Image (cartoon, rainbow, N blue to C red; front, side, top):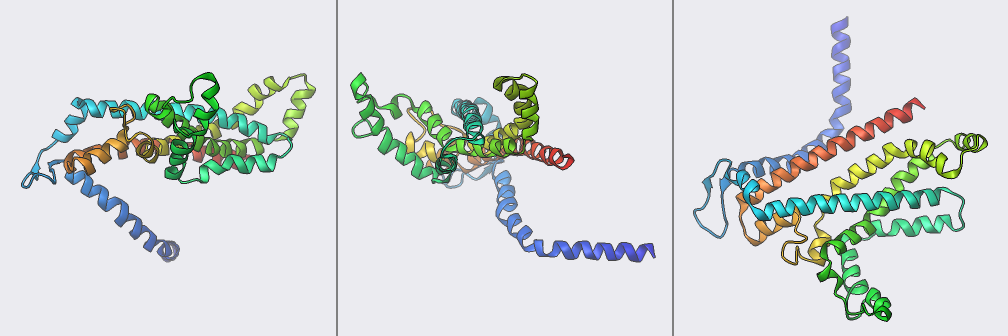
Amino acid sequence: MRASAAAAFSRDAWARRLPLLPAFIYVFLVTQVPFVLTIYYSFFSWNLLKPGSFQFAGLENYSALLTNESIRTAIWNTVLLTLAVIGFSVVIGLGVAVLLNSEVFGKGLMRTLMIAPFLIMPTAGALIWKDTLLNPLFGLLPYLLTPVGLGRVDIVNQFPMVTVVAVEVWRWTPFMMLIILAGLQSQNPEVLEAARVDGANAFQAFRRITLPLVRPFIELGALLGSLFVVQTFDSIFMLTFGGPGEDTTNIPFLLYLVAFQGFSIGQASAIGVVAVIITTIVATFALRTLFSIFQIEARR
């Protein structure tokens, strides 16, 4: 009896999973097979511009990651860009979320306007910033700075990393705002009312009650944002093309240069494998934070 029940349960389980099989096969073919090939190529010295260069190199491509100055610079730029963008986006997003969670005039319109930057394609957004806002000849910002003598400053070339960070903060602040706002709206207003009755001011209530409540949402937004900001390519390509020099060259852009400008498939594959490992680590922490939020909400 137990054997037949177990067999029936197993058949039911497979019957529920069967509709997911085509999607699983598709995802496996378009993600895992190319990744396995990337790992394979990372152990070879192969440059498409050099016929006969396909030779086994062992860990040579990986050891080059530790000695190559360009790779170290790209790693540093990636870390700097990620920390700066996530830090500013979380702080600004938290402030905007608190504002939109209160009773202010035009809250619906403000929320729509805040979401707009996140809906614009990254390439289009970078072009808007470069040619419409920051262009030293006819850009809006240089025009506004003309009275103080800064109208002809080429901001993109003189402050490349600051420019990329500003564009990415503009893009990712709405994402942080939405996640934090979801946490704020799950707060019980009676708790805040009780705190006010007990004599707590607005700052004390925010620090002691609101901030601990939305902390998991802030962590989730920061981790998910990091997962995408680490892969920033569009803004760098359109704004600075990695320069001047290597000032804004991060890991994805270096991978593009090595693979599609230098045609060094082996070295590019090694960089890609390392990038995937880093992204997977960040994604693991993001999923754990997401599951912890689900568990907290389920206990309420």
